[in-house]
Length: 235
View 1 (spheres, rainbow, N blue to C red):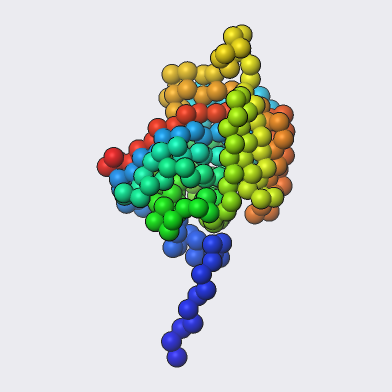
View 2: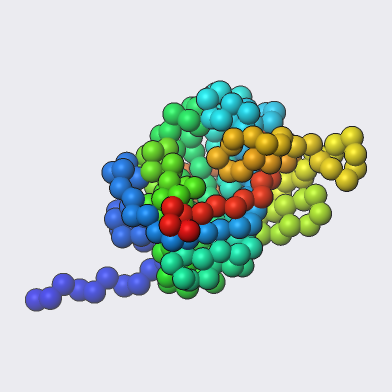
């Protein structure tokens, strides 16, 4: 008797998500591809003051000894092997047990439900590190991918505020820290940080994560905003 066809699903069982959609970075495998993304990444984490990872490049411990965070990526323009990624949003749940640079990250990905099949797969390849290039370091830093799914990822960028909502799973809002000049927020410039050289300091206003057994609240905690210009090795 032929095996029953597995029903289509956006949120696959963990074993299938890892094997079919987002290869386990612990295997140190990558298939360099042609891709590029320009846009903005912003996040809110569990550090009580501005994230020490930015200036230490992940070598300094987080202020609480661990890093719990959500990340939001607004893709203004981009492509993956010819497939347009412009206008799509991505959310990440990130759980790091110690220093960022020491790895052992656990990550879940939420990909914009508007993405085509090829765009969805391409985004997962990029953010797993399997596509190489700027995010290729994830093959060394991420030890477990706990989930990958389509979701209604809503991102709003309004003045000095940024917000993300993924149903009841991630609801976050952050605000830039005001600098001496009202036209320029507090920021770190010309860094070697993996996200990009210019990082705007921010703080969480209201920020909750409720998924994969994680129950986090980052209100008042460290946040940051970074313009991104990432590329694959063949871009």
